[in-house]
Length: 263
Image (cartoon, rainbow, N blue to C red; front, side):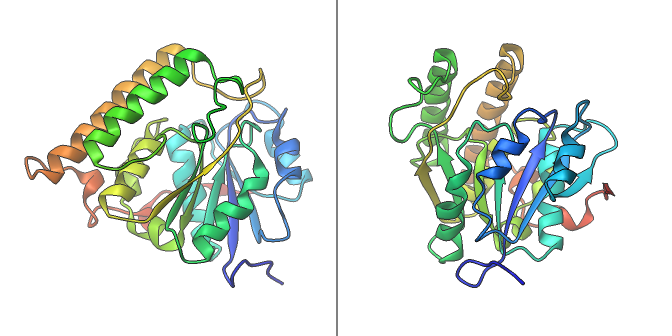
């Protein structure tokens, strides 16, 4: 028996690493009446994340060690496609983003109006009052401004960890060419823009608290340089000055990716 939305199978994927303190709260607020599958990919957690996920009845996939956030997502999407999902919503299990928005995000894709949807912390103007550190907000705005110039898009941000994708997008984008680190999100969004998919945004209040995952300042700087390199590659390829594998549709997709262990 499938829940379905507009006749489409909906999967929520949770890329997890040490999410034991927030996982149950996140899962409790996912609208299960329209979600067919909730999958958690554990990237070598050192806490009770896998045990809690099993207790909650989630499908659990284990990486034998910590491979990185980007590689975690590659597994999430491949496994969701293997389960015949038509729409896949990626939600961090740290309760920073509002799980109830799975419904409108999935509906925007299942209804046929969009191919990609991201939940934006910037739309609505409450990011800083919601607890986003000022340096993160300023870097978000600066990097987004530069990326919009380089890509020609007009997105409110490029750095959200809450996104939804159609099956076609996940099958088409050369995701295996992307980083295994945090810049994966940025590269994936740039690919969607490059290949002219319809991208929508929805306002999302975000919560910042000690249990919510966040990269430190050093990794944030590394991420920032990665974002700039992504935008520069996009523009160079659009201008015909260079060719990069992340913008090559013939490059490897998810079908050839490694196989994690299944619990």
